[in-house]
Image 1 (tube, protein in one colour):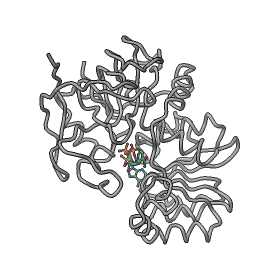
Image 2: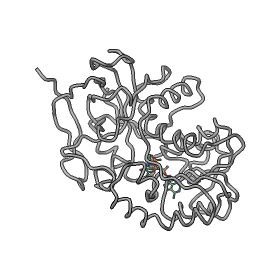
Image 3: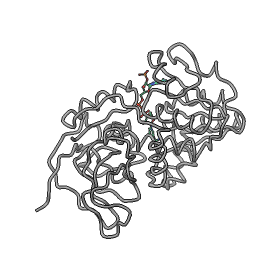
Image 4: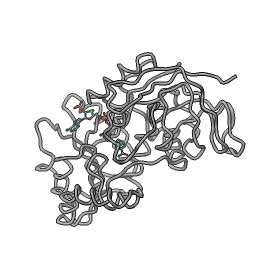
Length: 336
Ligand SMILES: NC(=O)c1ccc[n+]([C@@H]2O[C@H](COP(=O)([O-])OP(=O)(O)OC[C@H]3O[C@@H](n4cnc5c(N)ncnc54)[C@H](OP(=O)(O)O)[C@@H]3O)[C@@H](O)[C@H]2O)c1
């Protein structure tokens, strides 16, 4: 008999909150593992998907189970899986067309997971995959951040910021970050060198000659990044308008490429004027990069920063808290 599970689903874009339903557990394909989820984290992308804000890039069939990363125990493996076994504690970020971690179980491709750090609980491990991979891909893969370089990381108190600051320090960089005054102590403890209270100080007038900007805000803040960047420097944005280069790499059809080229014209023009490199990053799952994060965490060179843990029965309160936009670190949903 098919097993059932609880899953938080939406039936249409624009829904205010998901509804928890009882559905069949997924069956793992040949290269999948079936994971019993113990904890998941909330990411702004969950809200953006629910509200329909990412339809241009991601289109989903309804009903859709939300949730973008998790930690849990392997309970079954597909016939071609060799790297994982029943009982393994794993964490991961499922690929974009197979999300659904706000559920008691998920079938996930083995390439999208890794063994979770042995020194973390499931709740702490669930705080890592999406923000850890995103920060690693920005700082290491795109910016190639080197010791002694200066980087501005926007929103240092957020889920991305708290992880990216630690990674940038591991790479030997000087880190400036924007943060509210009440979070100064917490963010300084992560290693940030220059704290800018974004309510009273304008980063673009106080910072000069930066090698890199990791932009999580988009809009005006992204445009101002080009005022502080050195020629040859790198600006990577998670929240700006994707540019033509991204559209090609992402395999978007011709008409969507043209739209993005036009919409991102101002940012690409500012990058050219500043002689800087600009990249829009849409993070992707990576088994290899998750293993690097596991290693750093087990060596205690990186640690998750958790704001709150909610039981799964209070998922909607957790989503509403995330929606308010003032999380300091990660918001976790626990199934245990
Ligand atoms: N493209 C991708 O692949 C990708 C991947 C991950 C994330 N993202 C995007 O990146 C953004 C950040 O994600 P996140 O997980 O870090 O979000 P988050 O945890 O919800 O961010 C909340 C934090 O942002 C701070 N903040 C808000 N406005 C600020 C401002 N103007 N200046 C400085 N700090 C500010 C808040 O501090 P206060 O409470 O002090 O105001 C709070 O600590 C989201 O838009 C998300 O969708 C994109």
